[in-house]
Image 1 (cartoon, one colour):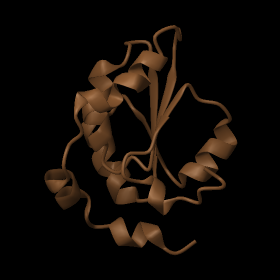
Image 2 (cartoon, rainbow, N blue to C red):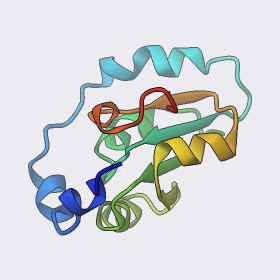
Image 3 (cartoon, rainbow, N blue to C red):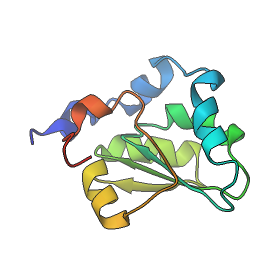
Image 4 (spheres, rainbow, N blue to C red):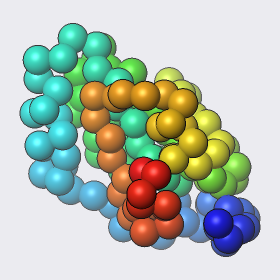
Length: 120
């Protein structure tokens, strides 16, 4: 896999400031799918600075555990400062998911094109 992380390192502040945000309606089906799950685990794969989480977190049940993984340490550092209650990890979504096993909901907002789709 190419050095994708290098493409994003050093860009977190600008990325977070200028990237378009997501409408709440986009996450409606995700939130609805968790309605009967007592303590859902939600994963943002390729989370960047947590832009999708800005919209998703307020919609989730208070019992949800949220994990975010991104290949860029700069993006994770920025995301962690915005959402300290989210469990942030630096690494690939593919490796995280292989180790984790199952999750209750998985999002990959504007990140899937960077991933090894067969592994994901």
